[in-house]
Image (cartoon, one colour):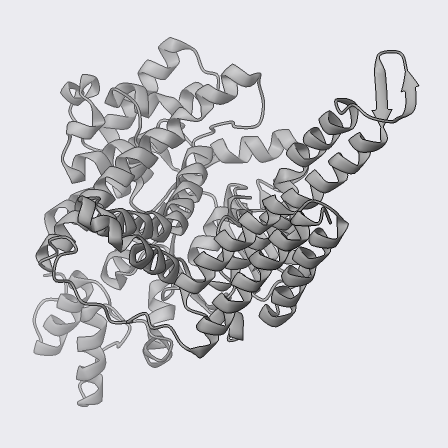
Length: 267
Length: 288
């Protein structure tokens, strides 16, 4: 059950999309999101969809994996769609009791659902094709100008990679503790919500204790290897922009420019 | 004597149908007699841990069945839950599962889940700490203030307090110092003598299980490689080494002696037996 969590899961591969510099991918996602919010009518949404489809095909990520990521958001998507259908003024199509469905409402709801889906799938595509380490590396590099303002960029990136690194470890640990407490007859499945919440104590206490122990050990291990923050630290994998990155960024600029132009014409 | 545990053609496959599919237990069958001490040995990844988690119903077999006292533990929900209390499982590094404010409350967790009365719980906790060699003074302490060895004993007491008919230990001495190991094993042996419980013990140390166990079950790649008394198993010392297991140090020595042409039994595994044979060879008194 715990192993099904796909949060930020990375599917290793060797496609153009996988090989792109993580900074390029981060920038592209930002450009893509901004472009999505500037979309106004079917034409611009079509352009965004075509862009996403191209990236999906290039990355060889299966659609099933992308839709699986959408599942947890289904309720939010439905909720916003329903709200938009009923709360938009315009040409009335159907009316009953206190509800009124308008043409504009339907179109708005459709665009909103499409926007959320495109947004989520686009960002998932990035995490699916970029290893967490590369991602934090890219983030650190992109944010490095903030270092001048004394913003702890390196420390933040390091904390992020440590957190990501420990997710599988903690999941495994939780599984073990659950088994051990079950072996002592702990019951997590029956009873009302308060009883169930209370039943979590035998899991959470050992989990926290071990997380603190691990953190302590990790800190010692890092100090033993003379870690003292980001200053003067070199990297094994240097990030370098290549031709494909330049091309992608140009494509991103064209996408954004195109969407803005389309918006200007109300398309 | 009747079989208390019967494992029938047990199979367990992890993540079946995905690229991560892995067969951990592959058609295993054996039975354990009431009051027996069975040692489980096998190298890392041989399926020991998967196997023992089936015995109390923590894992559901993907094939085959587990019978406790002649009854399948998967008959219905109640039987499965009851199996947890009938077969107590002490995990590896059990001290990491302690969570209560006091040692007493932690040991009482299992009995409490069984729905016993306060008086009965108190009695069981006191008995349990006696078996693991702890002093009553620790009962009101926080388990997190104890030493590593004491924590381990508290965790073991937590399972013993449920007074299961069968108790399964997964590497109970891992990470303890030699003195701690010896005294814990002595506690386990004394516990079995006093309660007539059936004991299963997973161990990497051949020297430990050889002395304690009535029979040994050797696993290799999820299958039963050997099953028999230590003497029978150690006859196949070469095969044991082949599958990455060591024989007890005394057995290794006696194997070497046999190779040198000295007439000794190569399956010797206890110090007293070794001494008897050596004295016989020297023409001394056999009962020394």
